[in-house]
Image 1: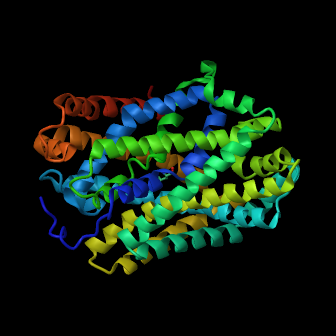
Image 2: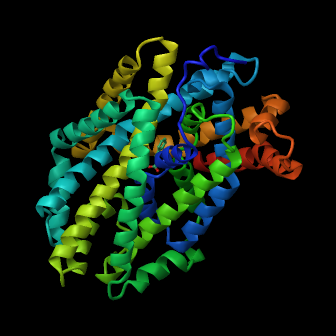
Image 3: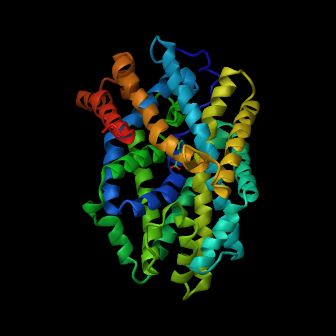
Length: 456
Ligand code: PHE
């Protein structure tokens, strides 16, 4: 089915643009903030191996499926899902994705706002230097909801400005600038961190698996992390794929993006743990790792050359801000494209709807950190949003997409998109993909969801 919008619709301008923009969505706080603390919390290398398994087994096939839906329809997520079969009801998956990404943008912007604040604190050298004062510094900052809420809204507004510029001039240009910068900063800090005395303990923690720490929960967390990090199950990949052209190789692009995403997560680990081990800090300090532990770590680790410590801190928080920005852009785009095309309003008006809704969610999340009494189902709203999206909504979105592509979509459509209408794609490759989306992906996700709800 064609959407009638194909001709006037934007698309990415170059192959590199496609990869950088989509990798920009995938690479974000998920890699630099969430992955290191999850790894620290779940025992290091063993967690990383399971995470890698999730990416290969479920992540790449899941990405290709979302790409197929988006590229086939060249439309926003809801319309894209509705156009795969004759039944419009599948459009609900797209709507679920739009809802999920809106919630994620709400709480993600709060953490992105913290990064912005810490970037400024790093520049001015305003951190609490010792461990206790770093903790106090973080608590005082997040304990007053106003500043974090305003910073989160500020971050959403920066995203808004880029989104309004459009797909090529906004999203693609920002990604082409920010992604290489991010990579360079990352390499410089990894170099500095790994050359510290005693850094090898951190490298070992990341590379030597200890399977005694592996429990069923570790699998669940690895899966949630893989989906979150690949931006899977949120209709984000589907929306970006709607800007792909018909020459974009879907499997190859998905694999490249997954590899880039994994390497950056690993490098983030190599940036944080060697420095932490070098000054004897435990790696399992949870979500506050990069805000409480790291400022002290950087200061102590580079105490022999304070200027270097200052430079590394500034680069680190700048890197976080860039990484967050390319991801918030993609989350914002999902809803903006939807409102723009479905309500037939201007792109800038559509963007405002999303900006306002996400700002309200962000405000409530920031408030729930300051006043943990604001709870949903016994958890502060901020944690609740994180868990609800990573462990329920994303897997559900990916599960339904797999069922749609594996069981209900016309086989010819799936094959044509998978192979870019060429007959030279090896049959075995397509069969393996199909087997995986029909059986492996749904089965694994169902098992994990059942475990999550205490059935297994
Ligand atoms: N993948 C992004 C990250 O790792 C987060 C994200 C989730 C982006 C969902 C878009 C959609 O930070």
